[in-house]
View 1 (cartoon, one colour):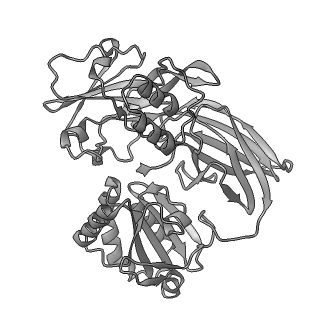
View 2 (cartoon, rainbow, N blue to C red):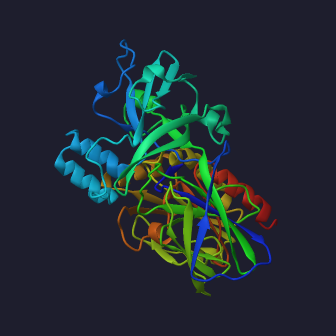
View 3 (cartoon, helix red, strand yellow):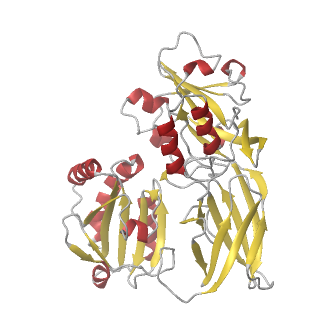
Length: 445
């Protein structure tokens, strides 16, 4: 699953007699370690100076040396302060990530851990500098079969992978703080941002199995909150984290994605998550009141828009599609998204049956530029995607992507005949889950 976010918030709902709270609600959190399917996938950032680390085998010609970063503001300042990145590049990074340039240390802060990955024959070797001494010779070595298929490990509980206890530092409020975390290194995922197939295979993805959980009471209901830093990194100082939400009595999976300070509705009550970070031990919620408005992007909301334009400029009336169908399925994908491409054959197979089952299908490709659009068109032709196609570009205002708050790819949104969002699926395998859901809930002729 491709993601743009950094933290995951799961809310579970159970009935309990209690009292009503208004205003700010501070929720204390406790930290746990889990072998379940929680965690953030993030690829190490490739570093520039190979001489920074000891313990690299001398006979290696090709290897990947990278950093898993825990604090971007300090990490990039480290790089700039050492002269590893020019002033112009640092300024761009500050603007892109909205980095704090004041609360940083002029001395090196080890706000990262190093990872070494290389392939010899059919074996992939991974070493993490867990103790952060810039020496791989005193760390554990893990060897895997480099020919293992990604498909073989999709959706598999990763408890069989070793858990690493890693040490790092952050700089906060003028102080250097020592931290630790529990990670697993996924050896079987390939990074498709590289054209070089060797680099794709050498890349390593880290997963944290550390999460926090808390609870609060509101209007005779008990809300349990699980905070898990799902997204694009382990960023300690993210100023705009995002969260996913889900009610109790379902399996742990991520159904809603909101950003900090956005409003979430639960049973008509509106809450704003005003404060939460990866390292924080408290979540602060602000209760805004009851709102009868039914349109929005969350499960249970009515579709907030009814008309969009396809890639040829033709207007598509989404509610009109629902007049002649029982459901509408919107598929969000991108030509740059490897899991999306892997799902396309299943989307195509689904399209062949959708007419028989009165299910309308619309696909939305989210692309960065014209080259991306060309690649999307190639995929549309390749997979014979002969249902309505929409191509949207990054940063377009009032787009269906922004209106429905799509931040993860692929994402599938299922809408019922009344225009209500009834189901969302994010990541690989979403089409199978939608198909199973529809088999159970589609009226049988």
